[in-house]
Amino acid sequence: MIKKTGAMNREDKIISVAIVSIWIFMLLFAVLTLIQPSWLEQAASDGLKVEAATKKRGGDLYLGKKDYKGAIALYNAALRLDSTLKGAVANKAVAWYSMGNYQEAIKVYNELLKQQPDYPDLVNYNLAEIYSKTGNKKAALECYLKAAKTAASPVKAYRRAGKLLMDDKKWEAAAEQFQLALDNNPTPQNLYRSMLKKSLTEFKDSPGTKRIIQQSLDSYNYNAWMGSYDTTLLISLLNQDFEVAKTYNYLGYCFAMSGNYDDAAQYFKHALKIEPNYTDAINNLGAAEILIKKDR
Image 1 (cartoon, helix red, strand yellow):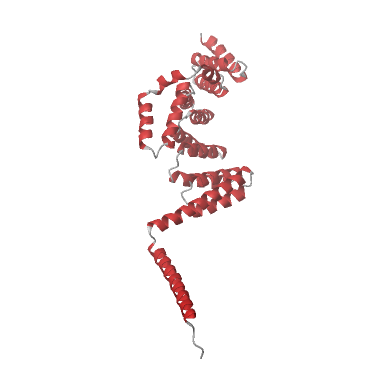
Image 2 (image 1 turned 135 degrees about the horizontal axis):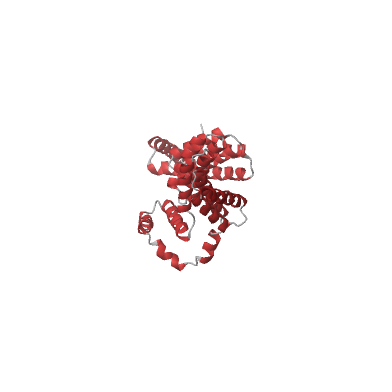
């Protein structure tokens, strides 16, 4: 029997120590895996979130290319890794809507509302649009009104709610919504207030900044800040907004249908100040003036 030399014994010892070290490391990792220490959980969680965000961005690319099935597949993959990825949920709903699968879009948007999204007004507005498109006017009206309550700029939601009510011949209720749209109509002050309201969401994790913004909103201090801006051009642009002209025209129509032709005529005139060639407002004003003369 051949004896091992001293050198060989030392190599064996080194190899033995290395093998034992590997087993100790593997055993340690197995124990750590079972115990799940916070640092290991955090590392795993961060890795999953990064992978989920990558898949979500891939879904966005597919969505931009109108490959809606591919987008949905990637959004689902992202959500399996990180169920809190609200952007993936929202864009999945957009993909379903774009495919014409309105029921799935409604389902996903309602799931998103349960997750308390940063902008519930947008989710409710999109739901309202789907309900309106599918003929569910009651649900559409409810969602438009919910959107208006939480929106930084609720004009469009009020206007859409008013149009639904007007189409249903509920003149007084419709007029109320159109008036709310005009009350919140874009002005330099309203636009600045909307920006501050959006900032409350953007800085939700910064209590100090959020407190300052809220104090400004509550005290209306932002009105004084407007002096540092050149508002002339902004006001000029806002005064040319055709959607505002339409709102005045709709409001006038509601008053006319309620028998209040004098006020109706004034609203039609407001519409024509913004858009002098607005055919509907021209015709409505002409009809209102004829009825005013008859009443007198």
